[in-house]
Length: 129
Figure 1 (tube, rainbow, N blue to C red):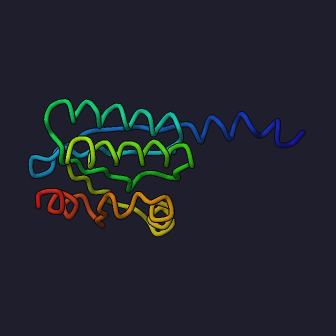
Figure 2: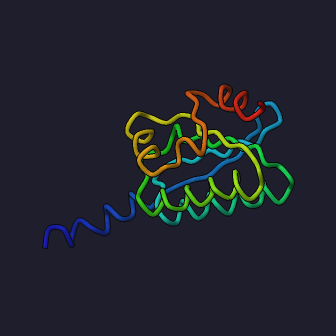
């Protein structure tokens, strides 16, 4: 009973996410904020596809404000990584990962498919090469 009463509040808080765009040294930067669930991962994938259709295959993902990544969010991120690197022969770097998220990405096999960097600026330099 307690879990049922708590569940809607928890669900509302956990499903919140925001995706924003910026530019760094001419490379698109997609910043993810909040909970990277299945919905957040799909939204991120859709935004990456929009960028790839513009013939931009070097992308920076900023996860410095991502609070948590769920397994379905991780699956969407893996699909996105493969699309960038394999389908579009691109390069992508994820910036701003804390240690638990970095370990989760390593266990899922996303790292080393995608590079990592501490800051957005470092990530932009990595995708430039």
